[in-house]
Image 1 (tube, rainbow, N blue to C red):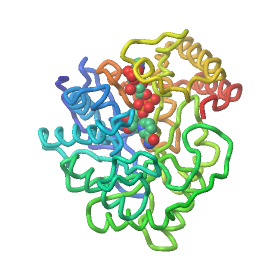
Image 2 (image 1 turned 180 degrees about the horizontal axis):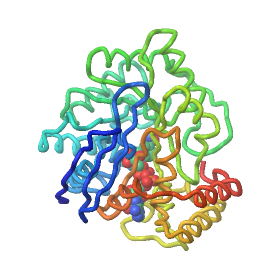
Image 3 (image 1 turned 30 degrees about the horizontal axis):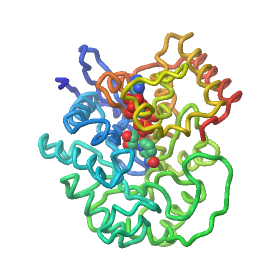
Length: 372
Ligand SMILES: NC(=O)c1ccc[n+]([C@@H]2O[C@H](COP(=O)([O-])OP(=O)(O)OC[C@H]3O[C@@H](n4cnc5c(N)ncnc54)[C@H](OP(=O)(O)O)[C@@H]3O)[C@@H](O)[C@H]2O)c1
């Protein structure tokens, strides 16, 4: 385990921390929505723990991340990934055993999620498939609290919408038929959890501009909880968030919690030239189709070349681009080894010169959103 010394600087929402080489790094903190809660600009993703990573590895990652100034973790009742009946909930359990042994629940801003509409039927005792109804949300939160060994969740998010809509990939709008749980019902159940003290704040994930607007409107009209964040995919190969949602995030202070900032590993360059590193997500699960378009390859070649020309690690360039966007509250990183985690967290101290930012925009204009 990394033994880290942490010094919290009292100023400006930044924490200075010593990394394993004794070098000083700086973690930045930002407000979560309109609340006065400050979360680190990097959030620790957890979805590999319990499948690709063991409990001990998960604990080691959390220890290291905290020593580096991270105070924000993201998980879900669904995890680990890939979702399976046999493993569901293991990730939250791993976080729970860490809280129990480190006795530091109050030091972490903990985010988890309730599944949206799904055919998966292993989340509820009745065997019902997932929906964002009042009853399912109330049942889900109890399961998460128990696994996480805590009596409150800081940020409780809907993992994806209840209405039938294409959300993972694709740019075209298709009208899909099917009943839907009204957003008002979902938000009212989440608001009741806040009133009961089980949840501090509520957020959404994999939402559209329309869905986000409905949540904001319902809060205003019905006096319900106002969402504080939106967790969507955002990376150099998928900047669709900027088309409609960035303005919401910025003007309404519903900041983006960006997931898959490395396009699930693609933007590190590890799969370049058809490479398939043993133990990588692609080698293990073959579920990375979203990032395997012909346009993506051309775009990535240019991003890698840009990073190389400026002496930057491509993963750190990709991560710091996400972290420094003005509509991003926190960048959710994920790692399966300590070396990866170290590289990814160190991205916070990488400066992207204007030539690099200009270069990124030129590539983006040439290959806009190859992996929506
Ligand atoms: N709301 C949602 O629907 C949703 C969806 C996805 C993720 N998330 C959240 O966001 C977090 C991060 O998502 P993500 O895992 O997709 O993020 P990502 O940053 O795009 O991919 C992370 C993966 O890339 C590889 N990697 C990371 N750093 C590396 C490095 N320096 N060098 C080489 N390989 C590296 C590792 O996989 P391998 O070692 O296997 O190659 C790692 O697990 C998740 O843990 C979860 O909390 C939310």
